[in-house]
Every structure is written in structure tokens, then in C-alpha cells.
Image 1 (tube, rainbow, N blue to C red):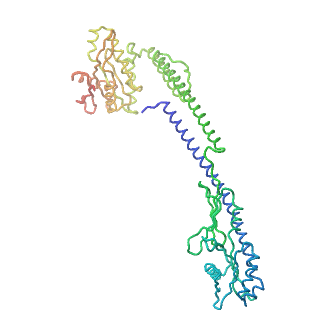
Image 2 (tube, rainbow, N blue to C red):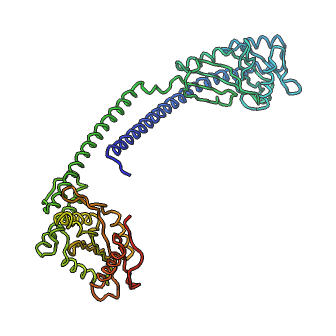
Image 3 (cartoon, rainbow, N blue to C red):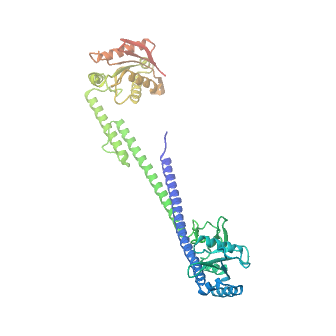
Length: 506
């Protein structure tokens, strides 16, 4: 599967875009969460201040009620009280307590319970009974909810000098002063709600202030001491919109960064494409020089990653050119096909035969071109020479660099598959059949169908000289010619004769 630099850079661009989008998204939520945390902390602090103001206000009222409940005259009066005396004393205490709307003196009867009166709400009597049973300072409690007489009560025990409980002082306070304290402490736009839950009864809202925010502003819930009251406070401050405040600069920075990265990626893309084109042209020039038999000392390169490969190819090419010149000088190259000649072939066969005992055997394939004489007779020797050259060039493209390709003479060629087992050599011969062209162009626009016959064998441990494998390959070639040509026969030294198996043109 092939790809292109454009697609690669496009993928890189998309990855960068996704990374920037993810970073922007994460940054937005980090900033938003930080702001939400700051607003939540601020709301908690404000709610704490508000709760403190309410608690201090209630504590002041409680202290005033307890102080009045400790009057010596009130203790004496409660022991022998008359209705008239009760009314006067209640009015007196009421005048001393700011915000009080009713005061009741509730003595205990012989049964130890508070004696109810018609002027006292039954809910208040039940409240006194809970306070008495709790044996703890009375917590404020709202009564008569949902009516114009709605109020909250505070009670204080009345005891004699022996700490004996004589009764209770019950004071009912209007909610207006408490509402005023709440609204004075409430920040603009915030919302306050005071709920009361007595016993197993569901919570009831007793006081509200402010307006409920329309957004999801931070909400703080606080219990007020040991009272049945719970305070709900919701600030009006919320995280600003994404394009509000300094966030517009953050978005602008992200966009500018994205634009810069895009320009840089495009610049790198153009430079990479131009550098690759330049280096490919250098590679083409080098192969052209190899074909002409000369290699330059240096070829200009743009990409360092290609330099090592190009240096290797240049050095190998220079060695090939030198070896080619050396072979010419030594008379080891066939002048027409520019392949190794018989002399060079025999030298390499001898070397590989000696190396087979330590490095493994090599295989030999002898090739004869079919109907070569007919080409000379019909089209002339120039056409025959062109056929030799064309066939040599075709073989050179298919044969491995490690193998030995030689022209033994006339239309006879030979390939030594260096260090190739019998099975490997058969596969290489089949590959040769598959990849050689079906025809070769000759002078004057003539195309000649390419047909060839082969004989293949492998070196054997029993061989005593290099010519043994060559003789077996030649015997296989003769059998192939007798079998109709255009086929390859193999001679297995283990069987001692050419096998019936053949490799035919695909």
C-alpha cells in the first residue's frame, strides 16, 4: 500500500488540529472548573458569614430571654402567681425584649408538666415539652407557619435558688427583624432560604430572601448550630461565557497558534517535497552515470537521511564500474553482451565449487535461446547481435546481484545461483520464466518472440571437479531440447538422471 507526502502531512495537520482542539477544550474546562471552585469557595465563605450573623442574632435574643428568666422577682411571682400578676409581668418582659410579639409565663403543675393556657398555641406547648425532655438549651423554632401570626419561639427555664424547675419563660419573636438581618447580609443577586425540620416531619421553608438565579450558580447548604434550621445560600456569580472577559484573548491565542502551525507545516511540506525531488534526480543521474560507466565523486543531496543510502549506492556503483573495467582489461567480459565470458565463468565456478564444502552448494542453469540461427538467417547478423544484447539485458534485470551471469558463446548463457540449494534454484528458474519478456525488439521494427530452453543442476558432495555440475546441467539441457524446447529440465544428482519434472513458460 503506497502513500504520499501530501497525505502524511495532512494526517499530521489533522493530528495537530485535534491536539489543539483537545488542549483548548481541556483548558476551557480547567479554567471553568477553577472559576467554579473559586465561586464555590466564595459562596461558602459568604454563607458562613451569613450563618454567623443569624446565629449571633439568635444568641442575643436567647441571652436576653435567659436573663429575664433569672429575675428573682419572677421566681417569687411564679410560685404564687395570679392571672392579673401574670399579665402584668408578661407585658413588662415583652417591653424589655426587642422584636418580641408575645411573652408567656408557663408554671409547672403538680404533675410536673407545663400548664397550658388558652393564649398559648398548642404547638408552642409541644415545643416546651420537647425542650423539657431534651434537658438542653432551647433552640429557636418557628410556629404558626402559613399564617399572619407566624413567628419563632425561644424558651428559658425558670428555677429557684435550689435549681428546682418552676416553669418556663416562652417568648415569641416576629420574623421581620430576623428577615432584616438576613437581607442586610445577603449579597446582591443572591438567594437565601431557611428551612426547618422538626422531628420526622418534612422540611418546611420558613424564610426566603433574594431571587432564585436562573443559571446553575454554586449552592451552599449549612446547618445552623443545634437548631432545626438549615440554611440554603446560592450566589448569583457564575462562570462567564466562553467569549467573555479575558477568554476572548485565550481563543485568539489558540487561533493564532493554529495559523502559525499550519503555515510552518505547509512550509516544511514544500521543503520536504522539493528535497526529495532533488535527491531522486541525483539518484537518476547516478544510475545514468553507472550505465555510461562512470561515477562522480559526489552527488548533491538535500536530505541527510538519504545520504547514507546514496553513499552506499555510489560506492557500490563505483566498485561495479571498476570491476567492469578490470574485467575488460583482463579479458573476462564478453564484448557484445557485456556479461562475464566463459573464462570468467569458469573462474567463478571453481571458486564456488571450493566454497560449497563450507558455505553450501551452488546451482547452475545453462540456457540456450531457441531458433537463434533462424534470426540470423532471416534478418541478418545485426539482428542476431541485437537479440543477444536484448536477452542479456533482460537476464541482468531478473538475476540477483550475488549470482554469476555469463555468456558462454553464441546463443548459450549460464547462471550460477551462488549458495542456492536445489529447491531454491528451481524457484529462481521459475521466477526467471515468469519475469523475462515474451518478445525482444530487433532493428527495423522487428519483434522476435523470446523462447529459451534450460538445464538445471546443483553441486553434489560426490563431485570431484567443477565440471561435474556443469555436465549434469548440460545433460538436462539436452533432454529439454529433445523434449520440445522452451522448457527447463532439472538433473538431480541424487537420482543420477534428468527428472521428468519440467518448468514450462507460464
